[in-house]
Amino acid sequence: MDNYVRIFDTTLRDGEQSPGATMTSAEKLEVARALAKLGVDVMEAGFPAASPDDLEAVRRIAVEVGNPTDGSRPPIICGLARASKNDIDKAWEAVQHAARPRIHTFLATSEIHMKYKLKMDREQVLDRVIQMVGYARSLCEDVEFSPEDAGRSDPEFLYLVLGEAIKAGATTLNIPDTVGYTTPDEFGALIEGIIKNTPGIENCIVSTHCHNDLGLATANTLAGIRAGARQAEVTINGIGERAGNTSLEEIVMALHTRRPVFNLATGIDTTQIMHVSKLVSNYTGIVVQPNKAIVGANAFAHEAGIHQDGMLKNQLTYEIMRPEMVGVTQSRLVLGKHSGRHAFKTRLSELGYPLNETDLDKAFERFKALADKKKTITDADLDALVADEFYQPSEVFVLDGLQVACGTMGMPTATVRLRGPDGATHIQAAIGTGPVDAAYKAIDAIVQAPSTLLEFAVHAVTEGIDALGEVTVRIEGTNGYHSLNAQKETERSRTFGGHGADTDIIVASAKAYLAALNKLLVVTGKYGSAETPATQGLTAWSRKE
Ligand code: KIV
Ligand code: ZN
Image (cartoon, rainbow, N blue to C red; front, side, top):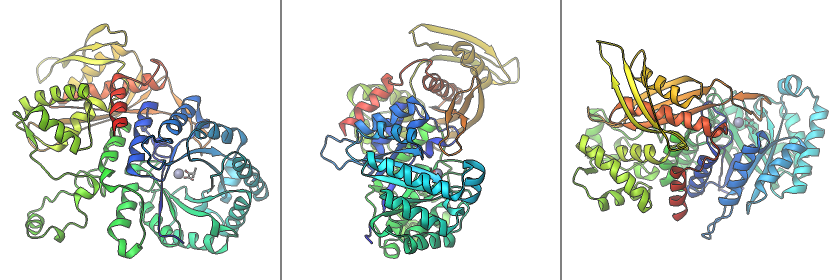
């Protein structure tokens, strides 16, 4: 058994299935580029049978990310398919353009799934696996098979199904704990049993796929790896169905930091972790909890006096990883009002944002405006500023002006000026229960995309009264936009996240709401393509890298 753990990222498939994580095709492509730069071995780019848009998004990733022109080794681009000919054909249609394509097909093997979801008996399941893995293999050299809900399946039946899948041509056997039910001991033993008892497994890669319902996904994945799995299926920030999937950064940094314990390596460039984490958080609108391991805002903060004293004497007293290792830059005081364009550009490219000249002009203008209001600008401010300026969905409607009146006297009122997709200016005033409500009502009256606000959160990017406020919202279109969930075989209602940053939190709130509405309009096809000046800018700078 080799000592290399393949990192299979499923942020764009299982991650995108989480509530609010809907991304446009252009955003998915950006994330795919960032994942390739991070060094993932395999990326599951989506579930092509879900809709023509999903197929097209996977196809674009296969074409553009699956065929690097800089001589680097391409990542494997994988498409998910249920065990049906139609799904497998769609997955192949999308991924075949990649230099290294993979089809990932799955069928449930637990009694509860077979009886109630599939309405099939063991024999029928076994037969379908043989047929469909064989069919996938007739199209593609690289086939992964997953017995869904393996964590609750009878191990003896699993050995049989996996053995037949191998005979039919599967090259990777992925073992999902679909509902996050197992404990580390159990999951480790399951992998060990599979490796010991499945005929032909020595020529295949065994993989883990854990969900985090009991908060055990990372521990279970590590137990599976210790038992011999050499592929880990993970997502950035641990996003995914319900409580999420195993988080990429936790597995990679555990293997890296405790190398003497595991004696295993990955191909991940750990310094890219923070950048990709922010990208995914900004595009999905799913905020990373401050105490999240590795990528949370507090993961490297040493607040308590006793800790700070220890840190000053020797960093190793309280720090097991250097923040730079995961791309967290330590400098607090970065730039101020008198900093020039060159210093600004240099700092941005150190942070992983090598902007082209046009984007740099835009960002510098924002920086100067911010520096007028805020004495010192930190890395966190720069991250928020770039995210606000560039990591936005298609700007169908752009906020052009906002004025509010609020307080204890009179009715909270907002006047909003938006530039529409036709370039025309729209002005609307509204009253509400507060200034944010009034602004949202005014925006609704212009945009006319009925939606329900599901979540609204504000946080300060840095400390201090002059801090930038960052607002995240999640909305659901009331006219219903659905997409097919691969596992539940149901149509699910999609929700859309948006974020905005400004020293004025009402402005940040309006920007966040508009970003979510714009995404809803683009994804539901009301305003065509997701290729906007903002995302085109991003694409251009990523290509330069
Ligand atoms: O959780 C799961 O079982 C899955 C499979 C499709 C691999 O996501
Ligand atoms: Zn899953």
